[in-house]
Amino acid sequence: MAIWLVADSAAAEIAIVLNSGEGTVSVVDMGARKERSRIPIGKEPHHLMATPDDKHLIVANAVSNNLVFLDPATGQVVKRIEKISDPYQIGYSPDRKYFVSASLRLNQTDIYEAETFNLLKRIPTPKAPSHIAFNAASSLTFITLQHTDQVAAIDLATQQIRWTIKVGPVPAGIWMTPDDRHLLVGLTGADGVEVIDWRKPAVVARIITGKGAHNFLAMGDKRHVLVTNRVENSVAIVDQQSLKVVEKFPVPGGPDCMELTRDGRELWVTSRWKRQLTVVDMASKKIVAQIPVGRSPHGVYFRGHAPRQ
Amino acid sequence: MNDIVAAFAALHGALFENAVLPALFALGLMDFSEPAFDATEFVLIGLIQIGAVYVLLRPLEAWFPAEPWADRKAVRVDVLYTFLHRIGLVPIAVYALLRPLVDGTDEMLRALGYIPPGVEDAIPALHDSPFLTFVVYLLVLDFADYWRHRLQHRWGLWWALHSLHHSQRQLSFWADDRNHLLDDVIEGLWFSAIAFMIGVGPEQFVAAVMLIRFVESLSHGNVRFGFGRWGERLLVSPRFHRTHHAIGVGHEGRRYGCNFATLLPLWDIVFGSANFSYRGMATGITDQLGGRDYGESFLAQQWLGLKRLAGRA
Ligand SMILES: [Zn+2]
Ligand SMILES: [Zn+2]
Image (cartoon, rainbow over all chains, first blue to last red):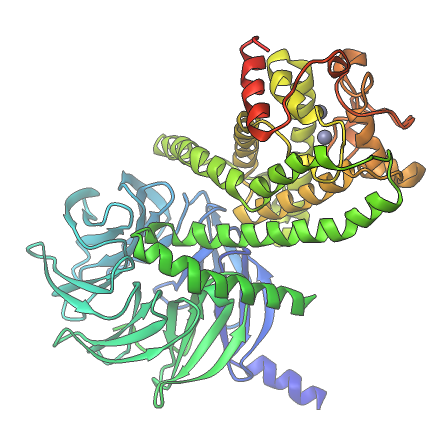
């Protein structure tokens, strides 16, 4: 029995969850749907992403001013890169040349050379730069400015702000549609998503998704994207061609970041206010598990995720 | 223990989700949803703490009083101070006032290419042990508080404010938050600066504040006991702090007093200000015996504090 358990847990796929309010990472056994361990990681880890080669998982510790690289299979710490200023949200440009870090608390956006993590430029971007997107050509990065209700576009080669435009209240998540035409912006202070034609640039539409629209996740079919509505406690599925909501289902506790299994069958969502991961069966849209994790769980990742578009 | 944490988390989450968050949304204040989540927790912990301290200390004050009182009227104003603090009004106002200052300074330094270090830079092993890190923070914060308190007694202008805390002659577990509001702002500045310099994370800061408050409530209690010969030297006890409040002892001799520590008497021992010879003295300020008025109501106390500061009371 014991041997069987050990063998099983060694092979089990894990989900990694950042407990932003207690400085730990929860390692969750996906099969058993249980937290297996909780590892100290640093102060205020909010977002995480895989390196472009998928070998490591990067956790951005905003208050510790560092990036921690994890082994995505085990959750073990591999290395730390220090002196990364207040990394709240992070992102690689599609061509992998640039690494961008948004410093929400300090109104700055930092552009690094991705290979070396050498800081190219620290750009004042008031106020509260929060989420990051790129165009397909990797010439621009787009940042939502949460406290001034704007989106800024920064030229990556020159590291100059190209333009800023006004959007609705409290823009958070920002997402480039797979056809490289539109930016979707989650308005946490309103009830939906704004659509920006970034070449103009102008807001061209608003999609009503639910109160407190916040963050995005692609469903892997290059057509649909999921949106969390943090105040309404729901997740909406948006068709990126028709720019319409095709379905919506409840997810409790202030749903924030999401991860979808490769087969599209299960959606794992961090429920910020409830200290739990909520697992939704995507066929029935029913909640099949609520897994207790740490305080204020934010980013979530697992290896067997759906394609990122 | 896990059940208690889970029950508390459920209460915190439900309160935030059903009351605070919809209100923020309706008022167009969603920018502040995350600080508000923390503030909701801060307020809840504060309330639970008031309840716990009351249940623990009120019977002890009745059964083993350091000094017997005919009534507890003078204590009432301290109850108000406690609620103003522990349900978060004062700390949240101070936080809102100081946060832009701290973040603005931080932003400026980083624009110049300087990232303030944390204790982990000096002791890398702390990366893997939040508990040890917390202990280090607690030591640093307590050390800083010793010196803050010592200066409150040493500098006349600061004493003009801090004397309000000492003017309570019925010293009870409610007395610890009895402070001038301006002094609260100075305290906020002091701790923000320290926390900034050593890189304390917000949740550890809250945990430290909660622990310190608990010990402070206890050490102000009108109770007769100490912690024994060695215990007295490890943790600030009611006897130890009562000596600090004693008329003619706590804030006069040896260049303005003794027993300034909040958590660890160690600092008083090391810096030569410890006094373990409690003799059941009365608490208050010497000039109160000569009729000096420090006010009875909250407003009078605050106003007189400002007047003392201006040299007019
Ligand atoms: Zn004092
Ligand atoms: Zn005192």
